[in-house]
Length: 102
Image 1 (tube, rainbow, N blue to C red):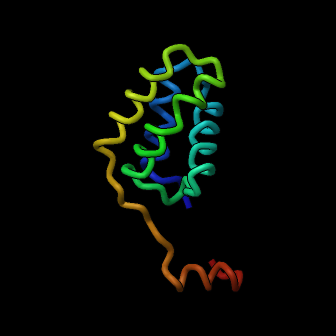
Image 2 (tube, rainbow, N blue to C red):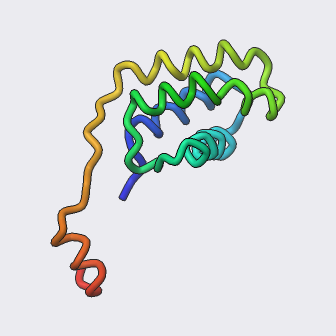
């Protein structure tokens, strides 16, 4: 299963508005989600916006990003228009994987 659209958008925007490379940006967002008890595959845009507003500036400061508040604003604004159509596996899909049939 792929990561949610919200995770992808937040990571992409963080990479573009900071000095972080793709791996660093994605890792930073994953750490935020882990701290909040959320999963990158299922996180919704509203959840990620709230987590970013509360925790992202601190993480960016720890990584030496200049103007972390501005980066947080960019990420939060980018998440406003993200669709929350998170795919979920049907019970049949889950059992098929468990049984080795996929």
